[in-house]
Amino acid sequence: MARSDDAYGRMMWDLHCGIPAREIVERDDGCISAGKSRVYFEPFSEWPAHHQESMNHVSGRVLDIGCGPGRHAIHLQQEGFDVMGIDASALAIKVAREGGLRKAGVLNVTQISYRLGEFDTLLMMGNNFGLFGNLKRARWLLRKMRNMTPSSGRIIAESRDPYTTTSKAHLDYHETNRRRGRFPGQLRMRIRYERLVGAWFDYLIVSREEMAYILEDTGWRISGFIPETGPAYVAIIDKT
Image 1 (tube, rainbow, N blue to C red):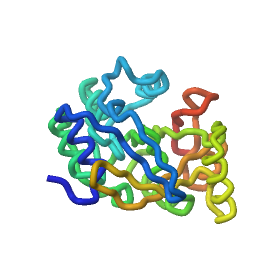
Image 2: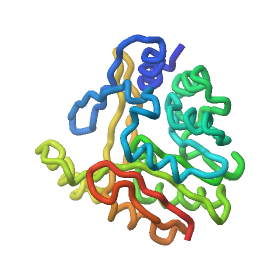
Image 3: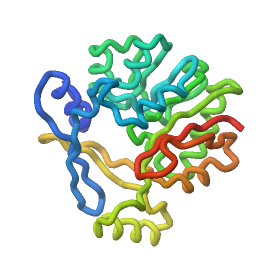
């Protein structure tokens, strides 16, 4: 049913089938963490306040990038929006379709282009600003996104300020990244589930100030943050 490296997708499928599962994240320094995976299936009423408020900034046709099992996309579809969800995991897309998402496809973020059509809102929730990976790839993708959106186009993207941590393991990792010429919050990680091990990938966690820097000269600007302070936040990003 699942590719041998689609640990994330298999975890989503098991959760969809009612089997308890937890997301295990392995970082390239050996740090291991376990997340609360049921969050991917929570109804709108149980979403964090900044997720709920961010939905008020959605307009027009929507592309949910890294949609996973589709909680944001399905909610917006129920609200009457024309939504397409994409994810690199075939099993996650299968779960999204079974959950009711009418338009869903297996696609990596690097494969997006104007060939998908024009979208008014590009959604990157669940810390999915991280999918940009690094500065060079982020700016390349942001320019591609300009070609997929009208003059009123918008990106709604979530991240988390990496500097709010007090963990020595995380602070040491920040310092290692600085020595390597990377953003302190630039992660090299993979997902594990049972005997499945996903491929390594870069995931970019940034502060509000770092996000603004990444957007420079890309044709996008930050219109506001939800909330203005605190660790987790959503950025409303509009064309310049």
